[in-house]
Length: 177
Image (cartoon, rainbow, N blue to C red; front, side):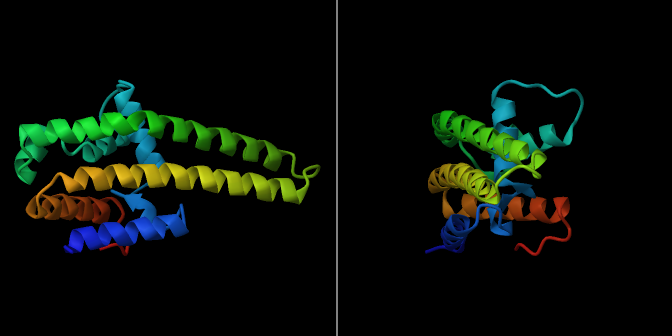
């Protein structure tokens, strides 16, 4: 098994154990935030100027940009297939992001009412938030896995190196390799 595939398997296992671990990050962005960036781009939200969210969205959709496709050796057919996987997963990502938002709102309400809220209700709400985040993260990771399966080992290595470099430059304190 290649180093990249081994890495993906390890990341997937770590994600199952912890929805907010450092392994659950891509390109310096927590998975639920990365999904939000992608979802915003796909809803055709055009931020004004060169915002960090817009820059982040460009990094995440590495299979679409002409320059990135050339750098990674992505063919037109691969780009179409990668986009198809993304579009197929998009409704699930949107639904799971709504679940995270809903559960976080419930938790925020309980926290605001801390003096009158039963602690067991807060614990239950926290567990629901983390379960929703974990579900979103799993969906995002499986989408990436399906995308990476379409790439040659050389392309995967280039994309992985790009993500590693982006991770290091966006978060210099990161220990991720």
